[in-house]
Length: 113
Ligand code: AMP
Ligand code: ZN
Image (cartoon, rainbow, N blue to C red):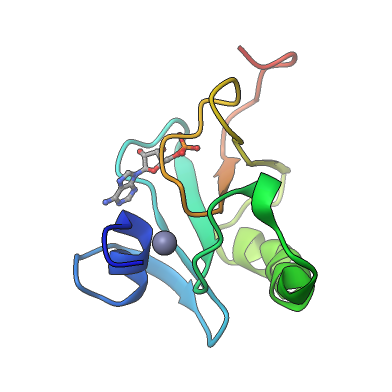
């Protein structure tokens, strides 16, 4: 999508600090980290939100999930981490390109705010 900021990051039209990349996904540092480690993991395909996943997206999303542990390990998150996906207005989703926040290196709160 031409006006999507994460598509622009995927296409290297705007800079990001990339941690992991393959044909299907990209992981990069969040601009406003909420934890000592705060990455965003996105599918390269523009999927607007968790609410709009289609059957054909399952392979990419399964692949993304399978890579989380490797990315976490590479970031040294040996004591655990949190994976967050905000969806829609109540979920406080601000970028409409499906992404998962990978947060670590601090103790998380539960329930989240
Ligand atoms: P969400 O509120 O779940 O939609 O998360 C969007 C996230 O994208 C926020 O944590 C922002 O800090 C982050 N963000 C927005 N623009 C950029 C950017 N250009 N590079 C990296 N992270 C960004
Ligand atoms: Zn996009």
